[in-house]
Length: 324
Length: 297
Image (tube, rainbow over all chains, first blue to last red; front, side, top):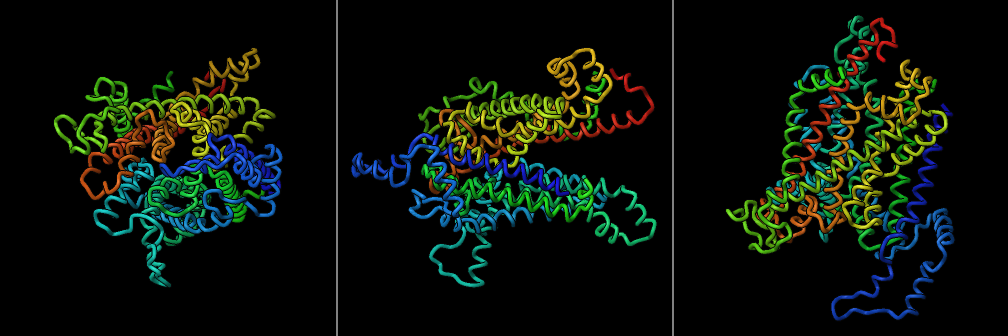
């Protein structure tokens, strides 16, 4: 068991190193520079700072140092929890990211929960022959084929604009100064459309997983024994079959939570939702190196943490792994 | 050859496969003949702006007076190109790497699989976005980035197949007779795994089409090539479009087209993989029957 965990941990460490290297070197190789932005203004008001000022700014941000030295400073900063200073937001990167995290967590957790819950209910019914599968399969395949941002646009048009059931952008009503219960309802109403767009996409995979997993488990000898013992059907279904069949779903759920974080980029851009995905997009547009580095570092840490937690959880749920 | 025939027979029983093939066929036809089918240059701005569908402009025009129908056809060409290149490229790369890892499991295999683990753990879309920006907006770069990020999963599947295949008697015999890796790869592994590889090309193509549309939607695609994602971006960014009827001919066609294209590849890929598992069941069944392993060679 320790061997298994050690192997996983070694992979995660490698990923972290790879991500740090990518994080650091890729944004620096991007065309353009954050300082170029200073010399462009609006129309005739364009101002070009003199070379001395640019030099001073370069020195101030440490951009005049050789790359290995910048990298060392970057690592030292990370160790102190300092992710740098965002050039476009004029605020510490850690603070900018911190404000965005809850919104993305709200979206990804709700979407993963919704798609897995539906998949467990429908997948189990289909595998146990208590439901015609065709009724689920075709809509699920069609919904799965729509990229989340396309499905999101349809939801936005029909539910948001035509029927005006839900707000079409943002995470809360600006300047409304709502509090308590009203504020919670407002936030939830804003989350409905993005969550629907995200969850439809994960559903089909989860459904197939549950269905196949239940199909495999229901023919196991121990299920037959339970039937022979004359246990009631719901006990066999939920306590015997589902418990074993849900093991892969645990992994699936955490993978959704881990990777939906990145997948939310398009949906967050579409709905102008102030999460990490939209922040990534803004950072790329603004050539904001420190912010990009910070966002990617958080993305990677998040993926690794969820993966590792899943490994631990899996050990707890499936004691058979311990013997390997 | 016999195996391929049973595989085709099994596949024909799945009605979804026909719907999928039909969609792919339609897409190939429209994509290949786009320059001849399109009534206008997709970049020409001659028409009346935001015109609803008319006899001159079958699907109307966008805000710049460009013909939506012509843009739709040329975008189909782009999606087809990206989908098939990404599907084929990633599958070939995944096949060679996976086969090498399965054929030399001790050192090379361990190193390659570590690389696969790392690439599969890194969050994908943010990395695609970053690489697309870094490499600059060109269709070729988009294809390269998508291939780079889609091969690892394929390599892992291929490796597990090759690990078991190499223990078959006939392959042991080929090795004993002096057949090297490249020879075995070309003559035996390719033939054994062809159905699986085709399924991977199709399912990866559907991923490629979706990813390209997403990148263009973010404005990170090739600005000189027409693309459904870019059309959607243009339509949705036009102020107030959703409160006028214009979205029905500017936004709707590319949105439906990209969904149908992905649906076509997904259905076909799903049917292929279902038929593979049913084929494997038959093979398993055969394996249980008493016969000499060597017979198969």
